[in-house]
Length: 115
Length: 112
Image 1 (cartoon, rainbow over the protein chains, first blue to last red):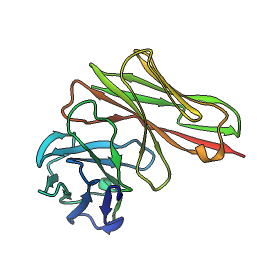
Image 2 (spheres, each protein chain N blue to C red; image 1 turned 90 degrees about the vertical axis):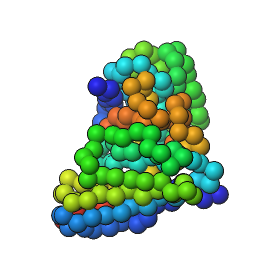
Image 3 (cartoon, rainbow over the protein chains, first blue to last red; image 1 turned 45 degrees about the horizontal axis):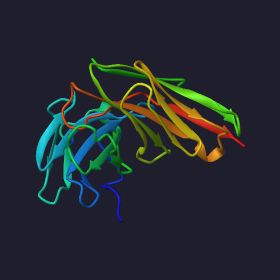
């Protein structure tokens, strides 16, 4: 069975540009979460979507937005890129969106470099 | 504000040399504590869930324990393939859905 798939795997952008990252969850999983992992640090929560509705939002500026589609895939959009947005962006899926579901299945991430 | 601190930041062991990794947390209403393993260039891989003080979970050479203030990941007779970054995360009553707050991780290197 396919795991969580993310695209692109690597990308380079310049300051001020826009980026869209994509994620396909494990088949049957209805919740998708996005995390940002800066080199040498633990992942930091950005968004969670369940059944196409936003369930949680982390402490990130409005330049970050996301959505979930009817097939449960998701996009993360970042506008007006800053150097500090350089990081590994991780997508994770789970069957449900509620509490006591900390068993998340992560993709391999999209590594974004902002020059 | 929920905080999760892991120590040490890095740990070098010889193959077979047992040790423990620490995860201390300050949260309002713990729902669950989770351990993940992350290999270089990969996403984290789920290892354990602990819900209440006194709980223990085991998997091969790994054993996770939980108290009211911290969790330990004990590694018995480690092998080089156990080399990875180990992440601790908490889920709290403050947060909606299944949001996790992660610590900074412990980078474990096991030499043959």
